[in-house]
Amino acid sequence: MKQLRPAFTIIEILVSVIILSIAIIPVLKVHTSNQEQIVYLTERNKRSLQDSLFLSNNILNYHQDNKTAYEVLEKYFKVKEQESREILKKTSRDVFIPDEIRIISLEEQGGPTAIVNEVMLKDKHSSIYHHFKLEGL
Image (tube, rainbow, N blue to C red; front, side, top):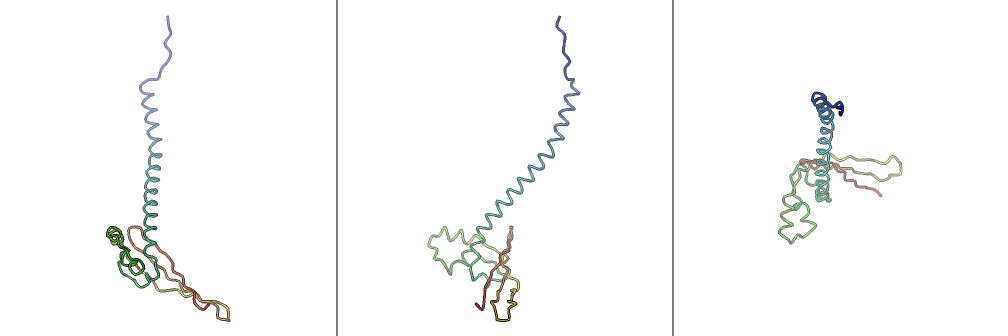
């Protein structure tokens, strides 16, 4: 006659399933958090590429204005395609330029002076850029 070998009881199986499910919950939370960060970084990088459209020399003239990329670039580029124009017109940012910062050389001989302007482009993913200008070279 064959002997029956001992097996897991239903209670032991349920306890092991509960332990496994409790252990998986933190892993899923970390995965969800990482997914949100990846989406944020992806969107932020897309915005950085779009921000480059606004970083021309004349951006300093648009303090506290909402400008489209087309308004900023039309002075420099002739955009003939209607579709390209529409894409540029849909891309807009609120521009904020705080007071400029003057960095004066410590040398008595009248070394160069640097003027630093912050350029804040506000939107869903706001950005801060710096515009540097040297004088007295």
